[in-house]
Amino acid sequence: MNKDVAPHALKSAATPVGTHEGYMPGFGNDFETEALPGALPQGMNSPQKVNYGLYGEQLSGTAFTAPSHQNERTWCYRIRPSVKHTHRFEKIDLPYWKSAPHVDPDVVSLGQYRWDPVPHSEGKLTWLTGMRTMTTAGDVNTQVGMASHIYLVTDSMVDAYFYSADSELLVVPQEGRLRFATELGVIDIEPQEIAIIPRGLVYRVEVLEGPCRGFVCENYGQKFDLPGRGPIGANCMANRRDFKTPIAAFEDRDAPSTVTVKWAGQFHETKIGHSPLDVVAWHGNYAPCKYDLRTYCPVGAILFDHPDPSIFTVLTAPSGVEGTANIDFVLFRDRWMVAEDTFRPPWYHKNVMSELMGNIFGIYDAKPKGFVPGGMSLHNMMLPHGPDKNAFEGASNAELEAEKLENTMSFMFETRFPQHLTAFAAREAPLQDDYIDCWTDLEKKFDGTPGKK
Ligand SMILES: O=C(O)Cc1cc(O)ccc1O
Ligand SMILES: [Fe+2]
Image (cartoon, rainbow, N blue to C red; front, side, top):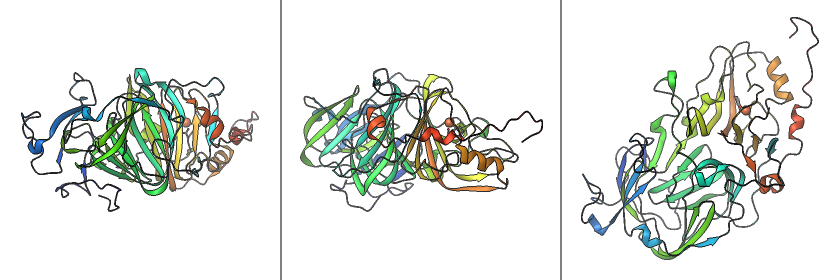
């Protein structure tokens, strides 16, 4: 676990054998972990009395009756049951955090859009006040679709906690280091890592090194899963063991505190007298995790042609239509390019899915200029896009040798639903007015001559 001292360090047991720095390996495993010896009941979930006087409480991430291969739940053994944490809720306003459906009549969402990095703010911003929604898709009330956000965080949440009943959050840092102190343990992340925070899990976000900026995909729908590898087989792409879930860690601390809940697109606040991060032991398969994107093993063309970008899918959240994701999280990392007689960058295309991209660092091959670290682009449903003039000319005339694409890490949140821009994305964020000019100079080369290339 990271050595930095959090404002209120969580207590946890010594790192058990088989864990790596306070994390347990595996994706969707049935984990068990206890921060005090004997705190976890064995052989049953609900003993008449739990050791240490703890309360048993189940957190269900899927319906009780979900098929067993999809069923996810975790049993928590905690100092106080969560229900004691909830008093009357009051609605609060977080004006920059929007939920679908959110269609601003004055905003044109149909277009090829690109943004420079949203600048860090002068003022203090927390995980909650620093969330800036860029796009929304689907409907939070029917649990389909997603929202994309940029976060700008300068300050830790102190005696303040949050959970989203609406969504699972996929967090993609671009600058700075964050700590997620959650009910189920502590996750520290930095650029080139991601975190997945499940729906309903209570946490506090602390700044380990700021200011912090990054991207969030808020998934209203079915949980992220690993894609099937098909004929690729049992290895490569994202491997299960590289996902890390924290070991149990708890706070036994009385302090006037707030809990903010995002529910049906609205924010609510309640007050409690103690830290809700009081789970001493837990077992189950519904838990947060982190993943180092540098462990992603890309598979690609080794003779000719450019495959569909789905080959680079890290995580996929199903939509109910087979093979058509609510969200795919796709990674464009450094890799070798070896294809012969091939136009190697992404091809020109139009897609039924909506593609939102972000740059974590370096240069993206289809857009050598203008798509910069911290920046984003949106190519909405059925809108043509592809390499800019420079990328096209460079790649069409390049000497085709084995070439390593280095200094590059970008990603895509791709959804089957159209993405609607917020007023923030359209008017406050640094939208590049001249983005579509990057294709203007693509000239007609055709003159009817057979064999001309
Ligand atoms: O539009 C993009 O840059 C993303 C993308 C990458 C790729 O390799 C193939 C298709 C695609 O949409
Ligand atoms: Fe694309």
